[in-house]
Length: 273
Image (cartoon, rainbow, N blue to C red; front, side, top):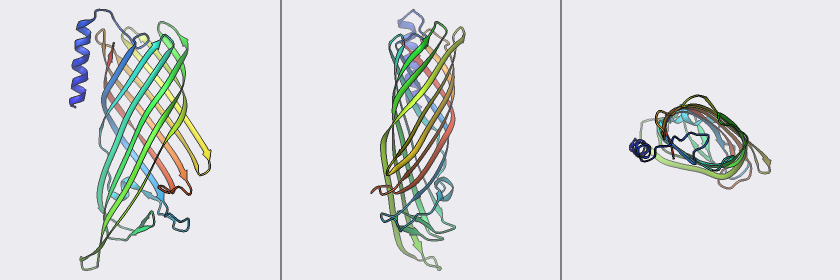
């Protein structure tokens, strides 16, 4: 919340210091900062280091009681020429939960048995950098094609206490799996000034990979509405839907399958200068 306030104050200072009106179709820099009301669904299977140790298919959120947490989110855009824009975004979603298992769970070669008390940690983050070229650029709208990189970093950790029927702790078990890689994406973006100081933006990015030992896809969709209530500051709402799928075979840190979906509303302040 403190970062949100700092950005809002910065926008007010810029609005006083400069008299000319800026807008998303012409301004050089845009900083969006706000809160992401995110809902996450994470499903995975992590095998052991040998192919004959198959992991359990689990819904990570439901099985281990890992709840959703609203997150700060920031984005920056730099229009270095009329038709050329560079964009950057960062989002982190680290969560944890503890639950007594109602079934055995095998994760990276370790089996956490029924009635074990297991603490799960999910650490997921995305950094995005992209370039857009507006092949249509008019005073009230533009349509752009783009290329970019999503870097997705993932870590899953389990630690549990094993208890005897009488409640006596007989041992502990731990297991973890991590992976991360830059993923190229292609996309389209459209921006429309449909009324004075009102803007609609829609964008879609896509990626698919089928290269041994990886097979996966990424889809990132976002729509936003901004009301520019001063010459340099706007208030916006958006909805973002993200789906990531990957199957990995014979990878030392992560061997298995991951399905990661998240989506939700974003409320943000947009500063243009």
